[in-house]
Image 1 (cartoon, rainbow, N blue to C red):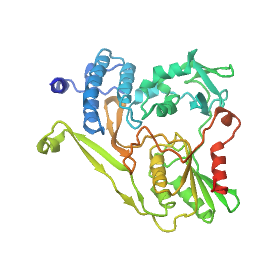
Image 2 (image 1 turned 45 degrees about the vertical axis):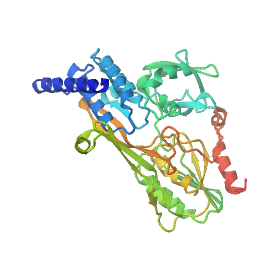
Image 3 (image 1 turned 120 degrees about the vertical axis):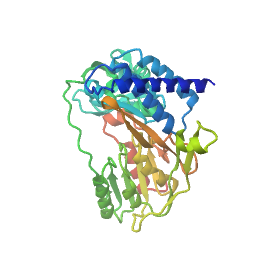
Image 4 (image 1 turned 45 degrees about the horizontal axis):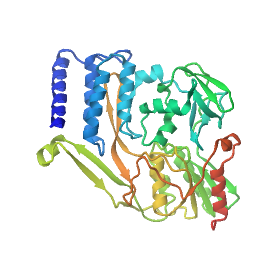
Length: 424
């Protein structure tokens, strides 16, 4: 009964707003720091409708009270930043790395990069990438503005959309919006590093480029693929494959690869037999199909696709294959990696992958806002859960802050050992 009452209340709000907006059309104010009541209520109602309709496996009994709390917060203030942060938190509570709220105004005014990326390695918040001269790869962060870094993370991670706590840790320092414009890092060696997000001079990010070389001449080859975005990186990787076609072993490095594309061309060039695809699940809540034909309306229907076999092309590289993985490998990168493990085509070395991959649905909202939500969730071919868990390696290798400072790569070294001595 409470659920029906809640739905009716939402409907009445929408009807009232609809009448109001016919008299007062929704103002387009992409640069305004405030939002009218009509703006806030309409955006919130569209978010509610989209998530309720398409997010797979949504628990409506938990989502509705969360929405009520979200309404309480956003209807109490016209401040646009507060609205955006509340929306980010509301959507982040769905715990899906492909489900997030974005506002171009917030990004423009508060989204300047921190200039570095850091996440926990061996229990220590470690800088893994930096475009700042004062902050080096391997530096360990102990505090942010005198707040212990673990406490600061616990306070702010509620705004980070992620499929797991580990996934949130990867994105945390890369989410400039949730940091002050100016703050100070305390490092384990006692140094204090002031960060000025708006004014710090940052080194430009290098253009992602596929690399390839012999690690042992005519024996062990190495290819590093930084992204699946576009086709150029895969075309270059396939060109290296031709060069290394007679290698006794191939090491393919997809660490740091965030996906962003379709991995099928390279995947097909490396698979030697048929392999199973993911099991996919999608939901539709409500809608005319369910209203007319489903006795359970307004519950939802779930479509599941499984047992899909993919046949690779001829002339694929057929030698021993080792894949290097890490927690940044996500989305299309995980789509690439998964069949190699389940078809037993490759040995995975390194870290468990991110555990976030979904087909998504995008909703463009007024004033430069956008909602992106997962519309299809994936499980492994054997039915085991994937989202928030990731693909575990056959050989787990931990990287430490000391390794980064010394420019050591224990993951690659372990892979070379395996390639040269497969009996190990």
